Length: 131
Image (cartoon, rainbow, N blue to C red; front, side, top):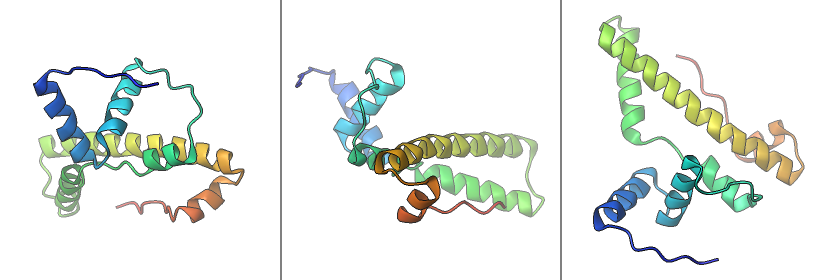
């Protein structure tokens, strides 16, 4: 089905910017936003391509940069209390993003009829080493 919408210019710019930051197509980003808000009913079966797209969505570079900067400060015992709180928030954000990705990895394994271990090998996914 095709639906055409007229969006306010500011909203269009915001959606385009968000899609660019995430490195995904505008269409994919809008569908994800609708799905996240519960407006889009996401119980249609996802294709392998859909799952691979969801698996490959990563966090913005700024998040990783800040995480690594704060981790380095923690290792050097130079972390302030507010920085420590921020690091905890970032760790939670990263873990939630990984959990979301793993949900799609499991779905892809089921779709392909292989084990989780096999799909991890196929996709060259490795656990992140603890700091």
